Image (cartoon, helix red, strand yellow):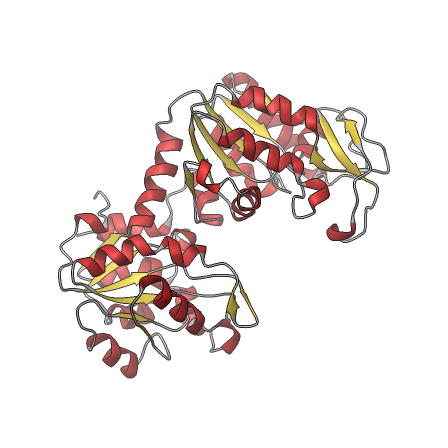
Length: 400
């Protein structure tokens, strides 16, 4: 069955059970970044404008199946109330008689946020009994949490199976449209830019992209493995030696398919191997063929940024997942910032995915120049691998 989304549903006056992603960064009990809460507002405001009442659920942090005050969602309820401009009630748990009573007492236009789902081990175990308890809290299930779409948890896969009606929210719809369209029917030329630390975490993505893209940019520490696979010495740089054959196979497959692979031609290096990243300093720029034995490649250099600019210039669709260097340290951020500036200036659909890449674009101040920034890290990666995510599978199977 095709998936249904909230703007296609009859929700007037109904009680919606909405899976949101309020897994927000916290420090000393205060929210330090409310981006994910803000991202849910279009879905919530649409539902409220139609007279629905809302029961919202989410997880926060790595709670281990039992209550833990430091992972309480109470601060999220307070912040959501400020953003919505209306009261948001907060439940002391996410299941049980008291919570059911609170949900059933909701009137049109009222909002209730449940306590952390992961205070119960049934959530991460995908327990059908726990899912059934959650399902009693609403009449229509809405999934608007792309960040957890790849996890077969009770609130993602179990609840839709037992509720009378289910659909995706507006945020999930945007993810589906932008990531799905970019991967399945892109306007060409289509360029993917990948980075980050490890080839191992993105093997599936790289292989899937080879059958889709016209050019593939590889930066970050994962580029080191590809360059070593071509016979270059990478000094003390991070390299996955056990994946050299895999890297050669990807390069060979790209050549066979006519996909251009763009690898760094120079690096910003450091000679501070062993030190914490924040204490490392830059020791100059070297050609990719001349990385000293005692040096580590920490960022792509200026010639590489210029080279990548040429690869990206004709693009009409770009998907970027993974930074070009260790951008958390300003000494090694310029390569990633340079790519962000290039994308910001393109006449193209630009889709950004992955937590580190989103953070880097945030640092660049160029979020508004990107076509779409995905809210999912692992979910966007698995989507880019061509996998069907549990959330979409459940909505497709049980949508009605």
